[in-house]
Image (cartoon, rainbow, N blue to C red; front, side, top):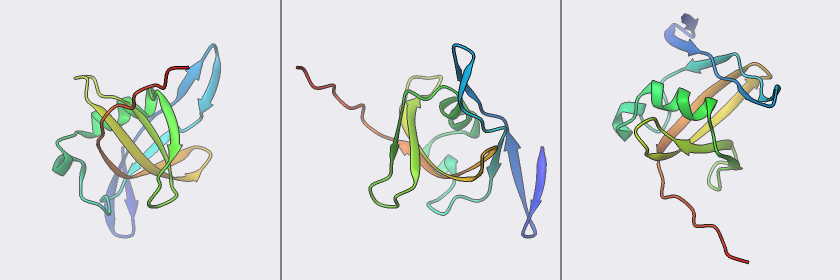
Length: 109
């Protein structure tokens, strides 16, 4: 779906994360504005990769550099990425940047 935004065309898709019938994230739209830190393709990713991680993230966090929320997960081809985003409202998210990151090792007790 195309959405007009400040004279530029943005693209929307849908992402929702549900677990046992309870949605953890209720986003119904992802707005694809030009990313401030470069576009998705510059990081060898696709919008489908990002959509997949937003729908199937494995953990959540906060970007240390920007303070924005982020999610971590695997793309369909197995790469581990972070998606840093802004929530416009309860239903809408704008990816700010996304790139491949190493997986964290879990600490042993």
